[in-house]
Image (cartoon, rainbow, N blue to C red):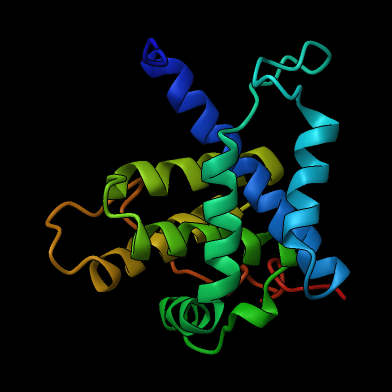
Length: 186
């Protein structure tokens, strides 16, 4: 059996991260339970079962094992991850105040930082920053960058390189003048 080309491996991992964020968002909207069914449904509807690119959308099929690991890991580790995210937000901000999609992105990124030390910190932060850019054009990418960058030294104290993007220079949370750009509207 031949090894998967490196670029295909990365593309499938990137697709799995995006699908995991979508699945986590859907779980949050739908309520508890059903992660397995959601993953099967998501993979069955959007991507071909043989793992090839989806001809209609031009998308690469996700690494289903990585997708399951991320979704199951976030669901299982949520009680531990949420306080870590809260601690990385600006004073007065909590994860609960953020939009559900931002919550899903931050939880998935926090899980990878905490549990997948085989993935470089910079890769984790960059991947979730790119996912955020796919959904948001405002300050939300800066928020995600800053929060994950702040969390990295706490979740990976034995790793010396941490900065994944702009170095977390902007304040995480706060939402500009009105203080509500990232709040959950529901």
